[in-house]
Length: 157
Length: 338
View 1 (spheres, one colour):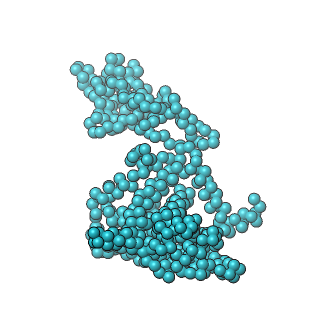
View 2: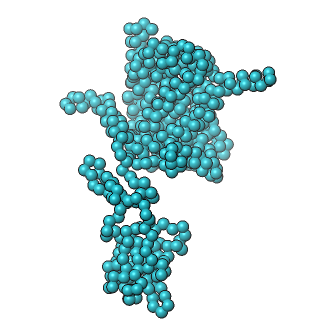
């Protein structure tokens, strides 16, 4: 565009408005960028720091996880004679320090982070509940991919 | 039997049907439900989101506003301690009623109108100019700084839109040589609609209409990021719905007005079809809905203007455009000799 034309367009302020309206109409016909979350879940990848699981059979009760925990989410709870870690998800920040420091790899992280509960009490897990598998919902999953044209694109997997 | 017939005659007379049923209160209520959903859904689509969805999923969340209204209905109405109580409660009611009132002057066909007048074009605009007073009153009576600033901004906005709006309608009145809406539509029966006859006036009136109803580029009065929600900050419950509904009611009335003045009213329909008011009424209504859809589309593409930018637009651009449209109309009359 020549400078003169640009000045004429600026005077009427029309080119900008036309561009805005055109891009708005173009966007109506583009596919959506969001995922319908509770019905379709995003695939979280293999090393995702999700909810924790304790393997109570190999835990040696060294208390290192409870000591390293920066938010005091892990605490040692007495079961029979020995103490095992219990967790409260009200505090957990999913930093993964406890998994890293565990000398026998008794703690592992799962690919689920949907820790929604109806009561606060449900978020406090004793060692016996902590050693159960976190609920991973069986829903269609999609994988986010980087797309040069659109930015994000989802592919079912 | 005679009594029933008389009662039916009264109920089916345009003086009852137009203000209360179509296109008055009841239809406006349904239109508000539809258009508020459409606004949110369209904005969501432009921003690549889903928008309202979970209320009746098969219809894409269409009754979302019904659910919202139910919620508002059961919300407690709180009247602040320092407020002017009578003005606080009454001004939203007057605001909504006066926003709806101009609908009585809008005819639906040659012979079907609530109020026949030689000056119906002026009457619609004159009734619309009363509403900003109640906007100021409700902002002042709330005794809240956000409400007060918001309503003052609404007053400023009125300075920006009112004169261009009237002058652009003056241009159409000059071009049609009448102030009667029935005759205005009659003049467009040749196929040369107002928007083609005088596009300058149409653009000016459309932008002024966006300002009147505080639609998106011009919602400086209720700017959420600055003023909570402007003049309505202290309101809650069902009177808050009245405040919000007033701007949509105004939009619906003005869209019908736009359809009659610039989009030919019931015009593609010819003589035998216009005898029954249903078809022409629907034609006007559909055109009005299209205009309304265009108005709410502006929300998804424009950011909010500053108040000084709005005033500058009103006085520097719209006023000049509207005066130019009067000149254009005079030229048209001179050349075509209407």
